[in-house]
Image 1 (cartoon, rainbow, N blue to C red):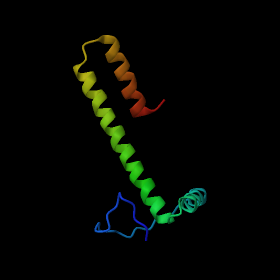
Image 2: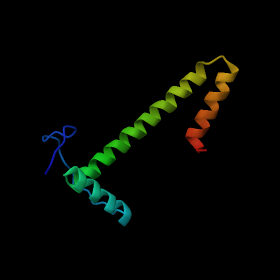
Image 3: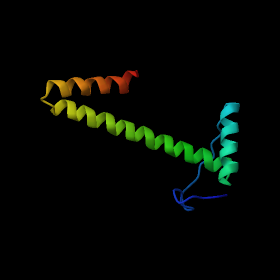
Length: 91
């Protein structure tokens, strides 16, 4: 098993079964081959990256909401509302 610095050897592991679409499985296998690592490690890295991205998006949302709550400028409030709407409902 190959470990990166992000996951210590002492960290408890849980076996999880995941079904991937064929296209995604091929991409994972290709990434593993070019990175000279296992497909499992690639999947773990991608999941960790996705979780971090979601957390950053959540923090950004709350920062914008806080700015909106404290803003007195009408134009700034309008822009903040539009950005929050995009984050919530998409384009």
